[in-house]
Length: 122
Length: 106
Image (cartoon, rainbow over all chains, first blue to last red; front, side):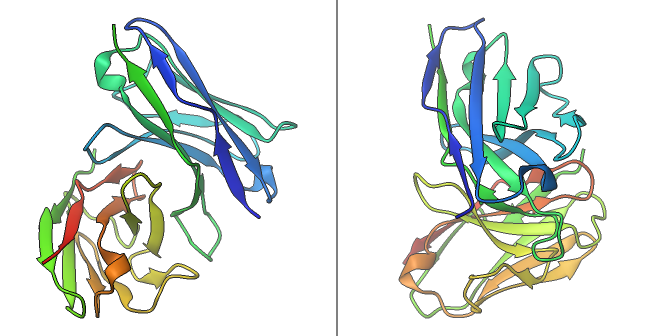
């Protein structure tokens, strides 16, 4: 079945970096863009970044531009999100989500990872 | 950036009630509007895409409408499993979410 499996929880100190992974399976990896969305405790959802399915086009949240990078390993069907210069306000659950561009669910995120808790604390 | 505003922020209702949640965009987004349901400790789940299309597997008591800047999510007859937080999201220009509507049992 189609699924996205993310790496485990991370605890980092302010100023450090974190790299979270998202392993896709059950579908053709290159046919869908992958997005990252984060959710701070008790807060709404915040879009972070996306990477295209079949090339290395990327787009980032203006708020995080310069501190965030999204990459992928196509043979490993895995997408990565790296966030540098971590601050306490980066504490959140980070989700990867498959972007649906087909008419079946056009423009929505139809498959989500289970989430990775990233805690930034001294 | 396009701002998405949901109302109400929280809502108390009973099983069997009809409820409506509204989402307004700060500029036109045509029909590039999605609705998600999120339960505590879980990832969001896509309910409605492109404003009014029911995602596969989602019960027909959920429906969406609207275009331009104003959209609604309606649940025709609340079931116990529907008590959750609901988010709208625009995908017209970059991607942004509403602040959420927490639907609680009365």
